[in-house]
Amino acid sequence: MKPLPILLFFILLAVVALVSLSLGKFPLPIGEVAAFLAWKSVGLGHVQPDRLPLLENIVLQIRLPRILNACLVGGALSVSGASYQALFVNPLVSPGLLGVLAGASFGAALGMVFLKSWFAIQAATFLGGVAAVGLSLFIARIYQVRSTLMLVLGGIISGAFFTALVSIVKTLADPYTQLPNITFWLMGNLTLADRSTILRMGVPILLGILGLLLLSRQLNALSMGDEEARSLGVHVEWIRALVILLATLISTLTVVLGGIIGWVGLIIPHTARMLIGPNNETLLPVSALLGASYLLLVDDLSRTLFTVEVPIGIVTSLVGIPFFMLVMKNARKGWQ
Amino acid sequence: MATLAARKLCFSYQHKPVLAEVELEFQGGVTALLGPNGSGKTTLLKLLLGLLKPSKGEVLLDGRELSGMGHREVAQRMAYVPQIHREAFAYKVEDVVLMGRMPHASFFSPYSRRDLAEAHEAMDRLGILHLAQRPYTQVSGGERQLALIARAMTQGAQLFIMDEPTNGLDYGNQIRLLERLQTLAQDGFGFIFSTHHPDHALSVADRVVMINQGRVLRDGSADAISPQSLEEIYGVDVRLFDVQGGVRVCVPALRLKPIAC
Image (cartoon, rainbow over the protein chains, first blue to last red):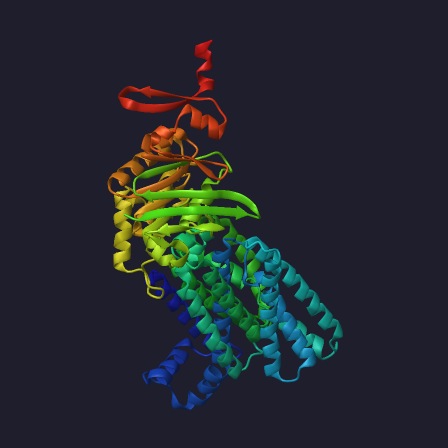
């Protein structure tokens, strides 16, 4: 583990977060936001007293939860993408590999049509994601062959199945009230989560990220092949199960927070690998920080570009595709 | 020195026997494992490493049953040096060698200064310290094999199990690797390696185990390699010649025919 790149990317995230706090319909000077945060957290700095209620309201009540949300979603998607890529030793792997995003979409759509409470919808989203990964694992097991290929095939089947279920729910939904909600959710949207949801999801997401970071050395060994890892003293089955569990957990929770946000889990690990190399000890924390910064910036775009907010999932795709093409050109460095 | 023993070792894959009643004991030195494709060489090595579970019989490491030992404990005594293979990730040579400290490092703390020092010492001993910061995937096959041996040394293992270590190496690197193996054996490391070249066995092994169709055919000194035993396992006509200083070489009859005519 190299502390220097981690520190640099942490500073990057802090700067991006500060800029994001000042951006919006009502722009604030960055210096004032910084002074306010310093005053609020450690009691230093000077803020004009008559501006306090305004800052309190805009920075803390409105923008901070949104920024935490973007950081959590971006960090979680990137770390789970990086972990999956290391586990499956495959560059085309993203957090959706085992069907988790399709399953969570189904859970969310089902919840929006049949359940009343917001909490119940969130629970359904989470359970949908877990069910989809469970189905992939089950399909992989049917064939008795313990190979990652079977797991990937299981994920494709499970993902396709749950995508079909989402379509069924959409046809059943009320086209004037429920269908637009479902559609907006599936486009990816950071506006939907309120403060208590963010806090409730934030704790398990951070714990999941931390868990994956602790497994980074084991992931390095696993990416050399099961037998080599085993001969290095790694409990291959346990570690693999744990990585899948944690990566699934945090990527399902991102759907609860922001719907389906594509591309982040694919391009951020790639970019991070290009910048600081493939060693997961450094790659995973850097992916988390870079992913959080990236989604914050994209969210800034989606908030400020037009008078009407663009769903962030659309922006991540539009920004992500050309970005990915650029990255692919240099991706050989990390993969060969 | 670790001792490794196979007792009445049997292994079947999908009800087909691959190995039957293998009885072997290793105590240091260099053992070459010869046998045709599909004879069960790789299976035997994997059973000895504990990567496969025997259908019957047992493997004993220092007198204790392998399946009852912890993975880390096994890894500290015995190391696997796989064939070189194309890796997807371009880890630095140093990172790969450091993986050898996995059985020693605690689960949560990062590698310590001591771990790094051990890795550097092993790399230095094998003459690849200058490659430490190079991507593992961009060094030559021979250097990659040395990195894997350095990793095995970093594990603290005394016994190295190698599956066709010279496979995929050019002629010069094959010989350099065998030289390295010989030097390390003199320093007290034990080797069990499988090979397709009787000449490699003749040049470095002090013991040869020949297997065919899952059974041990010969087990003894390098003298076990004879025209008869080679004919028996490979089905080809091979002659052995003693050249100066008791050095024995193996020549396929194919090359002798033009002279005979």
